[in-house]
Length: 158
Image (tube, rainbow, N blue to C red; front, side, top):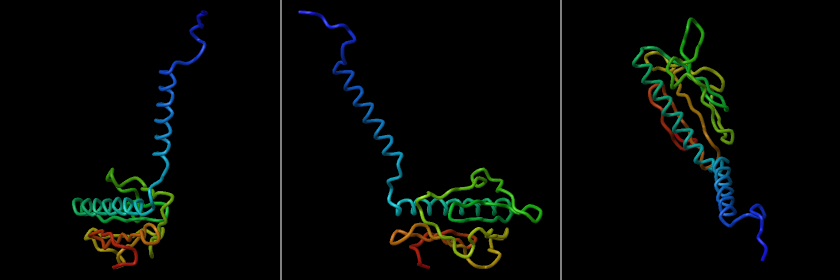
């Protein structure tokens, strides 16, 4: 009987370790891909937007300053008035642009790309609520903001 050299093949343990690694990597890739239904994305995005609006209102009340909301189908940003212009919001949680998921359809009614202004007394300057529709079809949601409260409703609802 002849002995095999130590590098002649792979052991069962080495093969099992490789199979586990391949399984973990493929699981990580699968989780990294966006497989959520658009209804879930619409709900999560609506909740995030509503929470951000509530935070902006609390900041406005605490600091007695108005704010602006600039939104389009790609995302939204909070701004504050500064010498006749707008600058990024000073609050760390609100100063960065928030992006919507690429796969989510967004419609900003009447204010697409225009700054929706809220005075320091929390009254919208044009006296109309701001509305964005997130998603499409039966899973679409509206985020409606009146300057004080943000609420989420099925799309097309009041």
